[in-house]
Length: 104
Figure 1 (tube, rainbow, N blue to C red):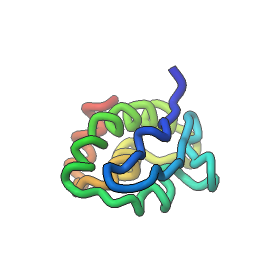
Figure 2 (cartoon, rainbow, N blue to C red; figure 1 turned 90 degrees about the vertical axis):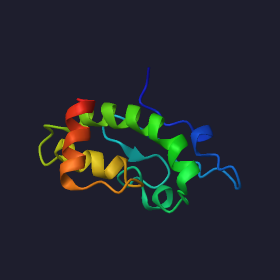
Figure 3 (cartoon, helix red, strand yellow; figure 1 turned 135 degrees about the horizontal axis):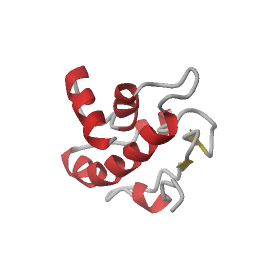
């Protein structure tokens, strides 16, 4: 299964889809080429209901991103990857480390 984030996952209950996708192993935005999730994705409102729908999908994506990105020359460590892909959660460094260990 490819590491693609389907556009349908970004359909807001109240608005249009963001339409930004990414694919491993580089995890860059197909639209702008920046590290995914890019600033456009991060700007998507994430209220409590939206976060509840994002957590399962982004946990799966974060697991794949950790496998793809860790250990690359100049690449982020698993804690940084968790913070990057789960930006919508208020995670401390310790919390991010615990999630990274669980998702490996």
